[in-house]
Every structure is written in C-alpha cells, then in structure tokens.
Length: 342
Image (cartoon, rainbow, N blue to C red; front, top):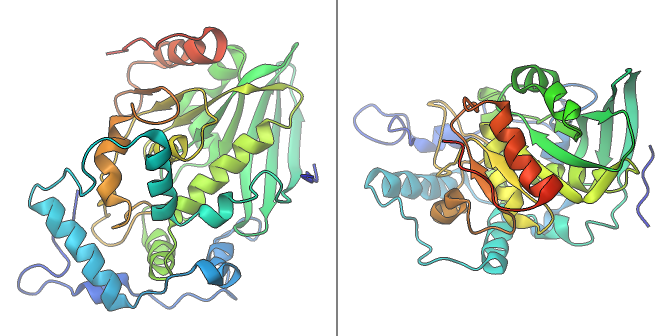
C-alpha cells in the first residue's frame, strides 16, 4: 500500500601544464553529510547519504580509477569515435536494462510502486482558473525534493505533463519562460520538478563526482525523482493516469530523454536537447556526465527507440508553444503521429 501524506573539455590531463584529472574529480572541499549544501527543505545532503543507505549497491572507485574512466571517455569522443561502444539498435527492453544498470537505479525501481512516499503541501493558491500548490516530497532514498503542481479548474480527469526545467531554473522560472499558463489553459495538469544540484557550477560538480566515485549517478537520481512525480500524478483524481507526457528543457531534457527509456509509462516525450554524456562545464562535471552512459548516447539521442514516441524541437522551443501543444494533443488527447514542427 502506497502512503501519500498529502563537448568534452581538453583542459584536464591533456598537454603541458594541464590540470591532472585526479584533482578534477576530487571534492573541493571534501563533502560532509552533516553539512547541508542547499535549502533546509530540499538540499543535496540527502544525495550524499545515498551511498550509505544503499551500501550493497555501491561500487566505490578511487579518484585515480574515475580519472582513467573519464579520460578514456573524453579521448574516445575527441577521436571522433562518437558512435559509442554499443553496436546496433537495442530493443526497448534491452536499452532499458542497459540504462538502468548504467544509472545504477535498479534497486530504486524495485518495489517502486509500493515504496512509501511522503507528500505535503507547503503552499497552496486556489486561483479562479488554476489551483497552484508547492509540494514537498520525502523519499526514503533520495530525501526531500520539491515540485510545483498546477491543476486547471473544470471537469476532469485531465491529461498531465511532468516538466523538467533546465539548469539553474526553478519551477516558477520555467513556467514563466515556457508559459505553463498556456498548458493549463489547454487542459493539462502540470507538475514541474525542482531539480537539485543543477546550477552548472561547483556544487553540481561536487555532488556528481562524489556519486560517481561511489558507483552511483546524479542523473539517475534525477530520473528517479521524475518517475516519482509520474507516480504521484497517477494518484490524483483530477488526472487521467493513462495520459501523462514528459516535457524537458536543456539539462532537464537530458533527464527526460533517459526517463522515457527507463519506464514504459509516458505517452509522449517533448524535448529540446540531446547529449553524448561527455559534457562538462570547463571546471566540473554535469549531472549526466558518465562513462557508463556514454556508450548509449547514439541510440538515446535518436529518440525513436524508447517506449514512447518523441519529438525533438530546437533548443528553447523557438517553434512556439502552439507547436508543442500540437504534439501533446496528438498523443494525450487524440492519439496519432506528431507533426514535424520544423
């Protein structure tokens, strides 16, 4: 019973005077699970506890071992061997198994539907047209994370969209930039995840490298949180649980591209970014930088080999919201094939 309480950098290890990779992947300064690094409500200290809570699933690496793994991945990409190491197209179940292993989230997905998940409303605004709630989730493994829920007034159940913002964007910034009001006016429930450790700076590097050295993956934890939002939406009476789409922008799009391959549950993916999983920010790792994910990048980036149909837009959705709504409507309201907006 579920309980609801309510491109590669060449600056590291390459050439004279280059900074050794070992210093690149070390914590700066050392991380401590006793010292929260973010908001008291939804900081990243819970991420640092995961290797302790999930010790049987940890695969600890030394800084030197991670250095060799990252270095091989970056040199491989630099030599234009960007086809990766997985040959041929994997069927969805095989690609799913490979990604789950690469993200090391198999233990999180096991018993996923039955695992207790706390959900409380931190704030609620009963607007005339849309009910708005700031929700705080509490998961036994990844701790607390927040999301913004928007529910249109009127007879339901409505189709719904899980939205994943880009780096350094909260739910409100995302909704302003990409017009969540237009989504609710079109009759969609929207649930926007507040991603943690996603500011493309030192904090993201420190958390990502810490988890990689323990055999885990920050992108995997973000995927898991997105799936918890999908799970939560299916409990709401206002939502038709068989009509849920996934919308991602930038860094959130990369997480969405992975999530849609990990479960057979979303009816459509709308995204504006693909990744090789070799990306860094010229000073640190990003959440999805991973030698384990890198071999899968060609097929994941094609977006036509997952469980759900997908539409790739230009970065930032310059085609406009009407084009996005057209794709969503095809799969969440009427079925059929998405148009090519370009």
